[in-house]
Length: 292
Image: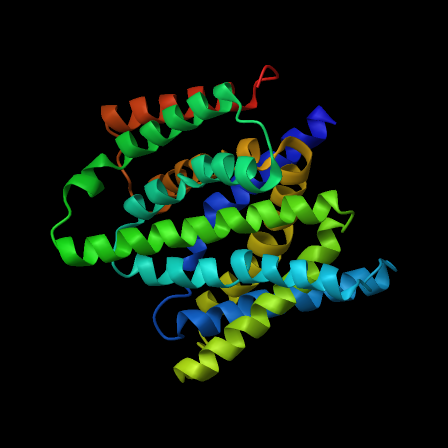
């Protein structure tokens, strides 16, 4: 089981770390809410068809559907929409730093809503990891010029991260209630898609499509890998090792993204960034060690 959990953790980190790069091809022509409709709509269709072909249970009670819909609201729609808005006001480094606070939020929300114990080693590792991310992206954080937009973006990021954390806790609750991850994600993404459609109609967004190859390929990658596989791996981990420990993957996402930036965007590593990376690895070891 330890090996399987490690594989799930690695899959979530590598895939979500690469989605930062893929999302850049989604921005511009199509409104954020419409791109999210396409992304989670496609993912939901694929997952529902998979469940039908593999004869997995798709019928749940009204109450169960209510909690699945809540997961869709907080994890597959509203959090992403607010993050998309925030990225138009902040640099990717600041967004990465703020999203890494999901670890601390999961610890607090897990204790409040699930009665989960606050593990000191996880808290320590989380703080070290977040400090490492701050060191890596400090140049972006310290070069902020538009203070008003920065504060707006900051609050948007924290709200979006809080939504994601609540979604994590709801997923843990659903799994404890016996609702399987695959079916929950299938219905949850379908509900998230419907929520985004309703929002798009109220906001009068244009249901257009970017016909470029880069948009289509990034959409498929985000739907299949970034949504189906990554969420399946990550939420299984949430149920298995706890929302606090699983959330440490959020600290490693931007490190993978920087690796891709090094390959494709000529990112140059400084001594401070390398020290920050070492802190992230140390925090990862502390959080995931068996003593935690």
